[in-house]
Image (tube, rainbow, N blue to C red; front, side, top):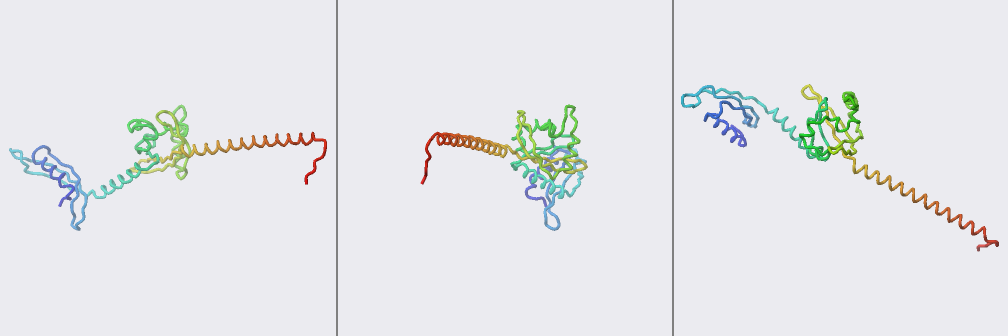
Length: 239
């Protein structure tokens, strides 16, 4: 029994096949098992013989259990959706620096379209931080350092498309998948915090300046009264 949500796809696929518009099929569909639970299967096959009117005479096919793969795909989509909706910058890159994925917040903050960001290397977002010298070397050494310090958040800057930069703290994670190593970077924009820190620092400096000026004024007033007192020839008694 085909799952109700998949019946239209299955029906149209086989109708196209039987009417001669295609010779094969390859679809994923949910079928009910003996324990009355739904399971994902891949259905593949095709027509191997038709009569003189084009009607199917013989057909071969195979069915494969892909339930585990579908569950992994679902979890991957769920994780990706979570990353997409987060307010932090998140992107994944290969060991050669190629950017494999970037969420919407990354594109928004950096000012790039996804097609533009794909053509960049990760270290172009901050060559100084990633240890890239004029010869383009230093990247591998930086990756080794990042791998050894994955638990640390690093304060640095990221460079936008318009060449301006903004402060961030970045946490890196490494994922091994199918024999390849991928790096995840999670960055928090620190612009507002840095602006607040600078504002507090400026206020502190301003306050210190006002205190210094006031102290100087009081010293001058005291000096003025001292001169007045010294100029009076008779003693003054206070009761």
